[in-house]
Length: 252
Image (cartoon, rainbow, N blue to C red; front, top):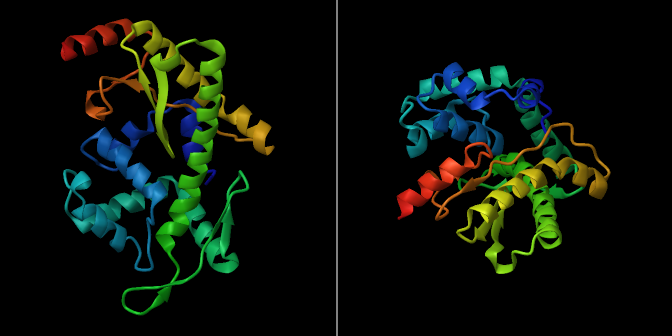
């Protein structure tokens, strides 16, 4: 939604931006770099006092303390982030301006979000900045995953006769979860189908809403014996047979 030029070019060029950000922002692991990016996109990344408020939050969150517990360190990281992704910074400003001047924000699907000032704990009246920056992005993500879920449901029924061997059991704004039989052929086919459905979100969005999405879509597919992510394996069509043997060896 931000149309950040750097981020869009990274996506189109297939850049491993989590690895790049890890090095650029001097973070110890790619996982922290990934979590940091998502936090910056989905939450209030700057406040009236500059970056100190968000930096304080990162310095005191367990997920980020491996990098540093220094507020100054995180102020520098946030500043570097917005130096790279200037479009995301401007988009945050634009969302707040739109919400405070018009009382609503409309996303590309036509879904709109209404906002009004709230009274804070100390009696002050202020706009809910975090919700203004979070709701439209999370909501739009939910619309995109909804389209993928509908495509998945339709294609499961049309192209496969798995019945209860492949069940869509849960979904959130950025995730679809299936319970699949312990059968490598079914797991492989479902994984390829999931990748296909995510790639087709753009054309489906154009069909449903008449709006072009100018960023290629992709979904990361993982499989495992449970939804405990550290034990799941990222699907790769080339290495699937070896990955399947390894994951079954661990479970036996």
